[in-house]
Image (cartoon, rainbow, N blue to C red):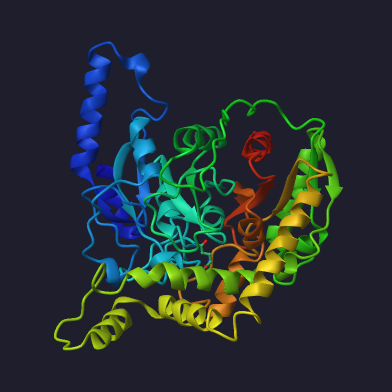
Length: 448
Ligand code: GLN
């Protein structure tokens, strides 16, 4: 807590700290140790944890970094947060993000951006930028983020943190404010692969409160020392040749591939012929789901209420116009248009067909390989304001989005600093659905 107080003025990873909860939890753990019950403590006992501000923690603000929810106080706790605390994690607070998780830099936060701890003039990535910056700056040992199109992996890459987006359905979404319900997935940021596996053990598993959560019982720590000898690792040539991929990031992925080959893995080229359409499909499906999910922030049931309106229509219009920032309004308007009568067949329906094709591409690739190695983001962190065109910003996720579309697991593993920018670079490991332990195994081998 002292470290957060001393350093977070610079990084602005935290929106709120939860001293009272932290001290209460610490006292509880101390009491258990004092009474000789230390053996019964959970895997995260005493570990300082913090949560993206789209995750409910009873009694704290859950703002989604939006003026719309600036005064919203959680009446209950999200399952992922509850599990981290039940496992003994000490809750330090809530972390900054892009507004409602729309963005790749935290610049859309209504409360000002977070800064990249490696260079305070640069973005930490996003949308889980606060979660990545907090781990990157050593302000928390483990944080949780959410990833709809890359929002765990890209900031993980920018801030040098291990960052895991599990397979869709592995971690409960109950109590996490929804962006794209069929794409959203919660996952951990940590400083090591072993810590990420422990975090996964704590938060994963079936939750009766989220009907899409699966009953997968895996010990994510079990394979970490198994090595990669005999494993087949997929490389996607189209990713490696992609326009916009910088030379230094490409070189890091190639080095990682070479390292895996030396460790006894077999490198296999795999094709994902429809992955090039993932971005287009995502910017149809994502806004449609966001438009539906954000309808609840209507100034009556939830959210900012603009005072002084005589009719409900006027109140809706003014409250939503003032409560939502520019990117949120853009997504809502896009989704509203895309789902309107007559337009649905032209965009939404084909986007769902593309989604099926991409899912099949991955399934076919995994007949040949155990795990895929790819870039996370095309480049390292950029300066504030440097990427101002929304569609340029969307390209930050060109290598991550297809994984959410297909529902696979994906993670970013830090592999050092880029040769040209001297900033952190992550490589992406992509697992078959519900085989998340395979990417952690490869990551552990690469990390050592
Ligand atoms: N950057 C992407 C977007 O803006 C992904 C965000 C996310 O994964 N939440 O939609």
